Length: 247
Picture 1 (tube, rainbow, N blue to C red):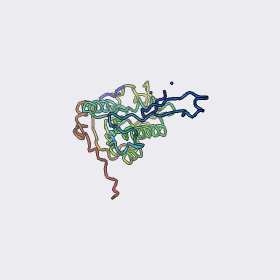
Picture 2: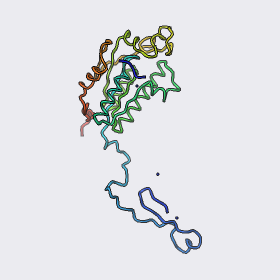
Picture 3: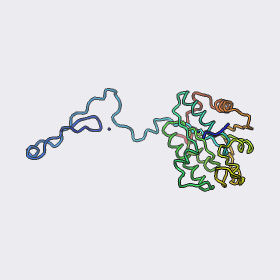
Picture 4: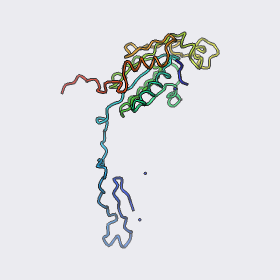
């Protein structure tokens, strides 16, 4: 699998209207400055006030954290999973680490410290979106155990997928010839700080699903493996795990 390069009269906010009286002698004679009309009935019967916190009324979405080293096929798999979820009627969004770096990463480089900062930003974005009821499919390297541990602590419906691919296959696939750059060749990627090459990584210790690909696994087979683990259309139990507290 190859990576995807993947709103004279004043109108009130409640719909009521008000008539503004002229200023000067007329107003001084006792006419009110503003006379408010009675609020109109709400034909839809909807509440006029929106609750301050709707998070308790909206079930959380699931976060599918698809991780793997550069060239493993994360973007390809994530894009296909996202498309399938959308076809099944799920409100889902697709996040790709490379594209997110283009948005958030201007101040960050590629050393271990900056990569960690980016990974935490991705995780925070996933948390915000899933908290609004969206399923999030995120393709990212983010090879940091503390990031994954934080995800499990703060994301009630967190699913971790490790796409495990040998370096020889990743080297052959990568469209930017990143691994060639890591060897000191003529690759177009950064000449150093390549995860799994000259930068140490922490592979997932306890992923929910491992997909092994020796270079012969098709995209369709990888997608089938994913949905065999979390069958569509529901794809998961939407009830968060109990916290252990008793009433």
